[in-house]
Amino acid sequence: MGNFKVTLDRIEGSTAVLLLREEESIKLSIPLFLLPPESKEGDILNLSIDRDVQETEAAKERVSALLDKLKNKNKETE
Image: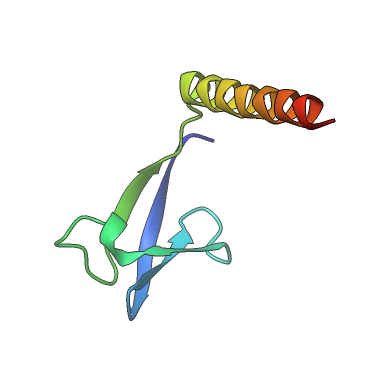
């Protein structure tokens, strides 16, 4: 899906409730600070969600390195 439009339905405290434009029964709640400062109820917003392959791989490598470190530490204490 990647890019889509939402309506800023309402603001509840520090949370923005967004409705997906094609199917207005689908709601997204996100922190208000993520929206442009001038956003107000009724505004149509463009959202983009992209997969970050490089960051995903970097995170997997960090976790793998930590697991290896823990496994080696456990072998030393046996």
